[in-house]
Image 1 (cartoon, helix red, strand yellow):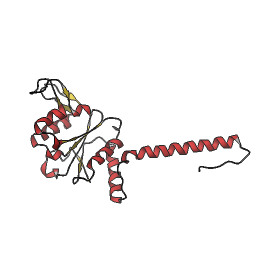
Image 2 (cartoon, helix red, strand yellow):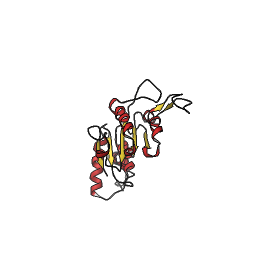
Image 3 (cartoon, one colour):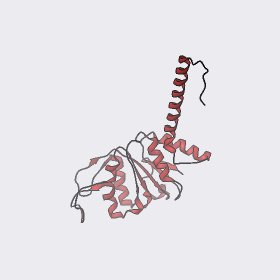
Length: 201
């Protein structure tokens, strides 16, 4: 119960109560909206709460983020929370499991291709970088990429441009990259360093 009024009803008092109730309701709705970014993550752990506070802070920027953790620790849930808490939350969130795509198809999947670029390329195809434009692209199990493809990905991140397979023209893209792996990429990959901010789950 919000409050009460006595009879005979004073119209001024009634309007005052209604105004206060509406402001209180709007505040609760705003709080719920603010917390919606982490709605899929349930925890009673203070360590996890500390991590989520850091995640929300990092989400406000636009740096590439790397999530490190064992399989099953909820890396994709963290990636989704980053997207929802970021200024890009109205844009698309696209997730791709890099280990599930054969190496010879990964470049086409991420960057797209032009008609005739290779056998079976019967039409132009937009890649996931373009599909995620203005939003977030989540690259899961990025540690399974070959070192040769890492170079291409790093170039795309640095220049914010991609070149579809079979094309001579680069295309600008506005996408935030969030990646994840259970591997220790600091030892294994060249991309970890100044290009990435690491979150450990």
